[in-house]
Image (cartoon, one colour):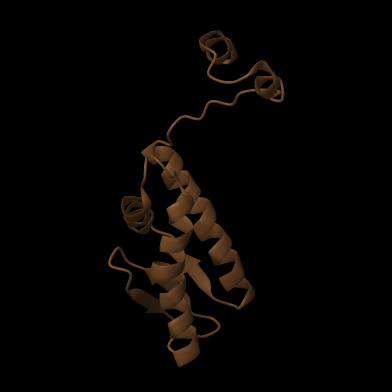
Amino acid sequence: LFDYVFDKGIFRPEFINRFDAVVVFKPLTKENLLDISELMLKSLAKHLKEKGIDFVITASLKEKIVELSYSPTFGAREMKRVIQDKVENVLAEALLSGALKRGDSAEIDSQFRLIRRQ
């Protein structure tokens, strides 16, 4: 890549010499995104566990999050917002209203509805 840019005269040599390396990024696959969603949801589950609530992570929830957040251009950046808007907000409302309490088990279905088990 350096040679191409240098040979074509796209940038001056002084500018090109400031770069140490070139990193080529490939678009994330669906499997990559499912893994990332699981990591993010496990982090949320850990925080809920500290409050005495078990959070069940389902494949359908992960798939729905990936479906809503997939962007070949931006990768997984949108995923954090989707999890906050669709999952964390539902759990926060349930905690604040008292619908979800210490000792409960919570699951969010693919329609982002809370399923609570005592």
